[in-house]
Amino acid sequence: AQTVTQSQPEMSVQEAETVTLSCTYDTSESDYYLFWYKQPPSRQMILVIRQEAYKQQNATENRFSVNFQKAAKSFSLKISDSQLGDAAMYFCAYRSPYSGGGADGLTFGKGTHLIIQP
Amino acid sequence: DTAVSQTPKYLVTQMGNDKSIKCEQNLGHDTMYWYKQDSKKFLKIMFSYNNKELIINETVPNRFSPKSPDKAHLNLHINSLELGDSAVYFCASSQVGVSYNEQFFGPGTRLTVL
Image (cartoon, rainbow over all chains, first blue to last red; front, side):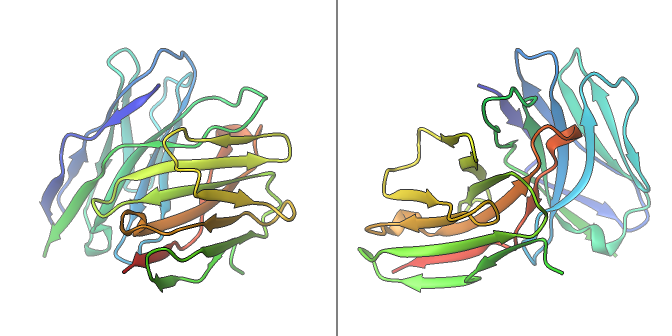
C-alpha cells in the first residue's frame, strides 16, 4: 500500500514571501498521479496542482509550483508571493493509475497547516 | 451550479441511531467516493464505486454502507452510530480513464454523535 508523509504539521510565512511544503511518498508503482489540495476554514477541498509521474517537467499553476523528484519520491509545493488567502490546510495526495477494474481513491498525507503572517 | 453536493451539511444525532448522508454530482462522472476526515484532519478513503465495482476500504466497519440509486448519486448509510463516527464526511466524483482522474469534492457533512 502506498503511504504519503507530510513532515510539517504547521508552517508560518510572512505575506509576500515564499514557502515550501514538503511531501514524500512510498510506492512500488512506476506510474501514478500526485496532487496538492487546499482546505480553507470553509472545509471545501480545492485542487491546487497536479503532476503525472511520467512527466519530468514540474507542474506550475500561477504562484504555485512543485518540485517533483521521482527517484527521491518527493513532491514539494512552493507558494510564491504568499497571500492572506493562502492560509489553509494543505494536503498532498497520491493516486494509482486507473487499472480498469475499479477506481482507487486518493491516499492523503496528514496535512500541513499554513499560516500567513500579515 | 454546484458540481458535487451533499445533504445535510451538519448532522447531530444520538448514539445508536441510523442516519444517511446524500451525495449528488452533476458532472456526468462515472465514479463516486466517500472519504472520512477525523478530528485531526486526516482524510481517508472509505469507498469508491462505479457501475462495475464497489471497492471498500477494509478498515471501514460494516455499519457503513454506500447505496447508489443511479450514476449521479452515492448515499452513505450508517447504522448504530457510535461516538467515534463523529467526523466530516466528504463525497467526491471523477471520470475514470480521463487523464489525472481528477476528483471533485463536495462541501462535506459534519456528523456529530452525542
